[in-house]
Image (cartoon, rainbow, N blue to C red; front, side):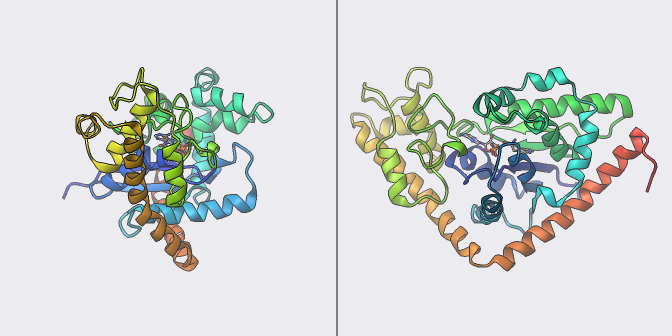
Length: 332
Ligand code: TYM
């Protein structure tokens, strides 16, 4: 039997999971999980590049694990684990940082955005963040990395680092490809369709979290920013708000843009926003309920992340051993 190809992906527990992270990443993780050998990580080490409250970070990490499972990731088939539990991530990250150029890290748009937003804390971790991400991916020899559009540049730099290393030492790393969905790759804020829906915006009117109540979800969709021409038409250049709602509705309901345009032909935005809100409520209801249930059974969650770390550590150790040997470290 041919061996399954490998997937690695991760989400930072720096806030509650949003509809953006679900449609851009998690949903595809679930869809791809039968076909691939998958490593799905909670990347807590990436989260501390921005100051976190320790108790909250711990709580969110466990909640995120529950939400991964509630979204449909079967822990029996996927390796689900916490990044800081597998020290090889930090170890490979150091080696790779010696094969990553200052100039290429300076060009990362996420670094530029984040340093503008956290001007009082532009730490070295924020700058070398993509190197740790490259280590995550390359440790598992991943073929595919399902992410939203905003992470594409980070997968590209991972490829550049892998290529640089491989050209010195031979084929050590598999060259990973990004997997970016056609619909949902960039979900925008409901209150500001010019900016990405993001964890840092949560609690505000623009952001939907997986654990939000149906009432909160409906209220935010009803107040979503649209435009003044009252026509449901996909035009991401000129009708950003409406097009974003259409993308959400399409991803939540499976309908394509032509079907959505036909459905709301001659109807106002009120009906449209209500329909989008209801589709999201129904999409998230079973996830929220399952996650709430799972969080009552902490022992089960602990078992999952311990098992996950054990499996991940074995795979990671194989790559790290090879890398250490190639660069000339004496074997332990
Ligand atoms: P993070 O935690 O910011 O986001 C997690 C995933 O969700 C996607 N995403 C979105 N997709 C569409 N619309 C949005 N509004 C939206 N917001 C978030 C992101 O593209 C991402 O796929 N650096 C990564 C985490 C990471 C990682 C990795 C990912 C660390 N190591 C290795 C893949 C492989 C990040 O900050 O994602």
